[in-house]
Length: 205
Image 1 (cartoon, rainbow, N blue to C red):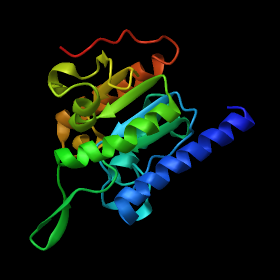
Image 2 (image 1 turned 60 degrees about the horizontal axis):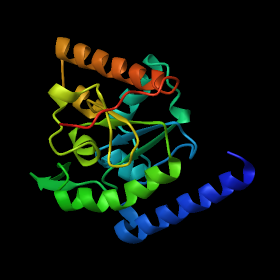
Image 3 (image 1 turned 90 degrees about the horizontal axis):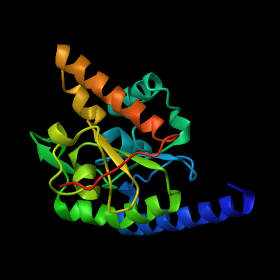
């Protein structure tokens, strides 16, 4: 980015962030990364550590993401990271606050911020971690088992590849852990290669 256009883009990003803060309050976890990033990673929602630090992907799943990106030859510092849902969805169980799947209304409220966020960054490709961003941006019929690792067109016009969320990998053990981890690294490599050779994306049937 040139100096002037970079400054304008940063000011526009700050405006979107301020709008999100007005909507979601102090629990907001906004996206971070270079505003000229060619690759954007989109997760489901922030967790406990993300909410505490006000940054996406900094908990155990974020630490695994760092290792996955290194294995795929991707520099995290060159990737813009964000979530569909901007605040942690929680429920109380046994006197403890735990994560829960986001509700439709929470997803829709998050999309009101995410879509301008993506328009501003304008990357070449998206990596979608999990079913929530995949269903929100590719289509409600998306199924991870059948559609993982395939390039699809999205509501943003930016091609996207969906794969398993690092948080899902952490719930696995033994061979399923190793196999799923390898699949995600392979998908990340596919996404990295798409930055030099634009992918042939298709609409979800």
